Each structure stands twice: as structure tokens, then as C-alpha cells.
Image (cartoon, rainbow, N blue to C red; front, top):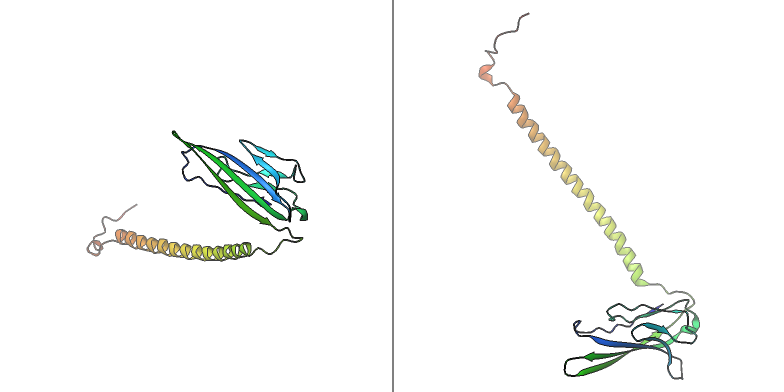
Length: 175
């Protein structure tokens, strides 16, 4: 299960030091740190150790993690806390952003309507494009056939013997 955390920087040319803290918040308890990114990804000790994988991008705009082998115990609230320290010539500026993710794990996967709509649209497009291809092929075949007939008519006109020369066909061939 991918826990998506996106924190875009408005200007890419500005460099920033980025730190990402992932927390699990059990009901009626304080946050438990489960993952840390501070220049490189680090798993922290706990029930998620060995099951978390860094899914962030190189430019650190996406700061997601994935939970492997999801269990019912993984249901709960997760926080992605992004801290960025921007360095400018005359001053530095810091920004902290917190994203809250509620994860619900079910015994069986629910029907994904998006996948159903995508599959239906795929088949509709497949039928439409096949019909369009057939119409295009028939159109091109007729156009080529018509141009061939016109070319044959033109060639026949060139091969025809003019009527004024029919009487004087030339010297007959003798043996």
C-alpha cells in the first residue's frame, strides 16, 4: 500500500534541505515515528521495520512510502511531516507541511469503479477504432480502384488506332 505524500516546491532553482518524518498515530495515543528521510531514507524500529520502502522522487517533490505485506493492524492515521529549509543569499526560510492520511485495511478489496470505467472505455475505443480502420480501408480501396480504372481508360485511348488511318494500315507482310 502506497502512502502518498507530495510537497511541491514552487521554484526548482531554489535549493532546500528537506527532512521528512512519517508517524503512525494509534487511537488515543501520541504519534509513533516509523520512517525518516534526512538526505537518505531510514526505517525506524517498530512493528513496521522491514516492511516500509521509500517511494519518493529524486527531486524530493514526492515523499511517499509503501507498506509491504499490509495487515489489519496497519489500519490507522499516518502523518507525513515535511520540513524544508531554504537558503538564500541574505536569509534563510523554513516551511513545515503536515499531511494526514487515514488508512483503512479491509479483508477483501472493494470494487474499484475507476478500473471498471477504464475497462469499459478501453473496449468502446477498441470497437470504435476498429470500425474507423475498416471504413478507412474501404475508402482507400475504392479510391485506388477508381484511379486504376481511369488509368486503364487513358491507356486504352492511347493504344486505339485513329479512324483516318484504318484504310491505310501499311504494307502487308508477305512470306
